[in-house]
Length: 91
Image 1 (cartoon, rainbow, N blue to C red):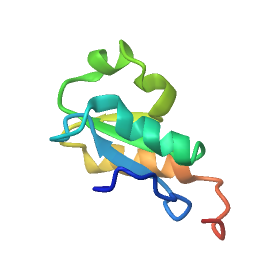
Image 2 (image 1 turned 90 degrees about the vertical axis):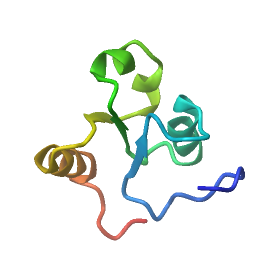
Image 3 (image 1 turned 135 degrees about the vertical axis):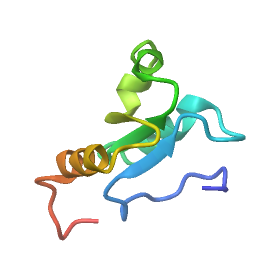
Image 4 (image 1 turned 60 degrees about the vertical axis):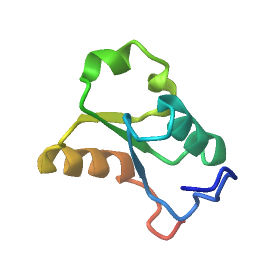
């Protein structure tokens, strides 16, 4: 998402972002996703551990936090949990 303008996220089942992305502050990416599409699940990847995230406001904008590098089983489980029961024809 290079553009500073909000984009429509209706076509995404989930957004995966990184806590330590270069040239981006931490919280605005997840917050921007929720501002455009409050129901779009957000997964945050971090190499800084779960403690940092628990102490921040990410809990309001991030649905799951996974350590980097994410284990495939943990990523699959998060994707399944966040997308299960969603209307497959929507989006």
